[in-house]
Length: 122
Image (cartoon, rainbow, N blue to C red; front, side, top):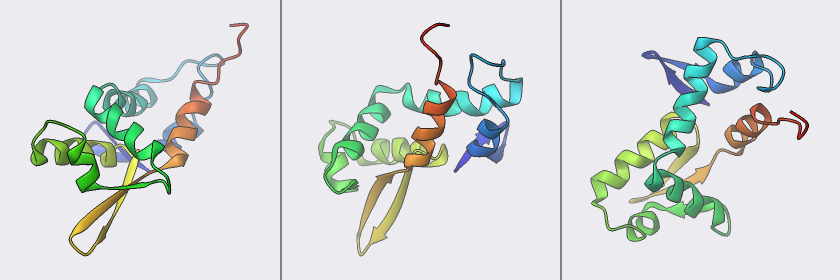
């Protein structure tokens, strides 16, 4: 999974492999910047809803036509949000004929979850 870090693409897994859960050791500036991009993408209400729509769909994938129909936004705006989610590695897509289908990248969510795995005693 790729995320943008200061103009270059970097593997989020690469960032997180060298960054232990937050309770053990502070992230360095580059690690924090890479992970922050993913959280920033999720911080937008439209993008969070898109992730929720895809995650809750039976079969784990959604046609772009179903995503667009769920919002009162223009198709170019939805396309922009989908692009952002793909760039940070939260979604992947596949074109089938004239439609594009989107799926979550479960590894990305798992990596973020692992990073935030903080014991209740902290």
